[in-house]
Length: 304
Ligand SMILES: Nc1nc2c(ncn2[C@@H]2O[C@H](COP(=O)(O)OP(=O)(O)O)[C@@H](O)[C@H]2O)c(=O)[nH]1
Ligand SMILES: [Mg+2]
Image (cartoon, rainbow, N blue to C red; front, side, top):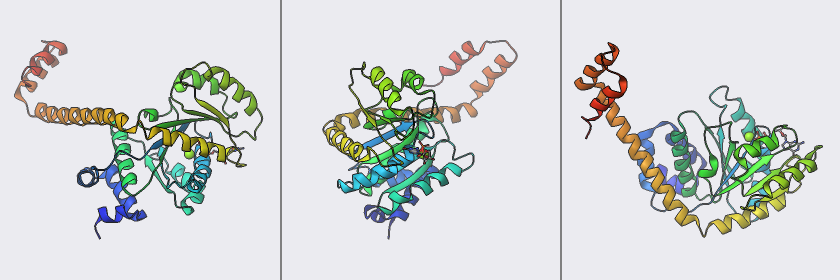
C-alpha cells in the first residue's frame, strides 16, 4: 500500500518512515507534503519546554494518559539536542515514555542538528505528518530557552514551561526570557523540598506579567497535579482552536518567505561559484586592491 494511505490510517511504521523522510530525504519529503498539505494546519500543538532534567518527558508520559481519557489522540515529538552526540538521550526518552506508547500515544525523537530554520521547517512538516495520521493535539518536548536554538513558543499554540526545585537557576532562567512565553508554568517535582517556595517566587515574578499565565505544582513521579494539568491543557487547546486559523496564516507567510529566501540563497551561491565576475573581484580583494564591501557591491550588481 502507498505511504500516504498508510499514514491516513495512522500506521506507526508509515509515520516513522514519513518523519525520517522529512529529516533526511528532501525529495521524498517534498513529494509527501505536496500530497498531505491541503487539509493541514488544524491540529493544536503544545510545547513543553524547560531545563534538561526538569521532568518534561515524565510529565508528558503521564499527561498523555490523562489526555487520552479526555478523548484526545496525542502524539509527541521530542527535540533532542544531544541525540547527535551519543544517542543515549533518545533511548532514555523512549524507555521512559513506553507507558504512553502502550496507551496509543505516538512518540518520536528528532535530532536538533542543523540550522534553526532547518529545524523549525522539519518540525512543522513532522507536525503535518502527525496531523494527517489523525493526531490532535501534538506535543513538542524541547529543552528550554538558552539551551537550544529553537524557540518552541513561536512554533506551537500552547506553551508549558517546566521548572523544579532541583535546578538552582530557576528564577534567573525565568527572568532571562521564559517569563513571556508560557501559558502554563509548572513547578514539577513538588514531592521534593523547596517546591512550594519556588512556586511562590515564580508566582510573584510571573504575576506581574499581563498575559496572566497559570502556575501549577505537579509531581510527575507521584502523579500529583497531572489530572489538573490535563484539564487545563484541554481548556487551552479548545480555546486555541478559535484563533488557530489566523495564527496559521501568519506562520505560513513566514514559512513561505523562509523557503523562498533559502532557494534564492542557494541559487545565488551556485551562481557565484561559477561566476567570472566573482572570481575577478575575489582576486582584487585577496591582493588587497579592493576592500570586501566595495567588491561585494560590484558583484551584487550582476544579480538582478
Ligand atoms: N522526585 C521527582 N523526580 C522526578 C519527577 N518527574 C521526573 N522526575 C525524575 O527526574 C529525572 C528527569 O526526568 P525527565 O522526564 O527525563 O526530564 P526531562 O529532561 O525534562 O525530560 C528522571 O530521573 C525522572 O524520574 C517528579 O515529579 N519528582
Ligand atoms: Mg526529556
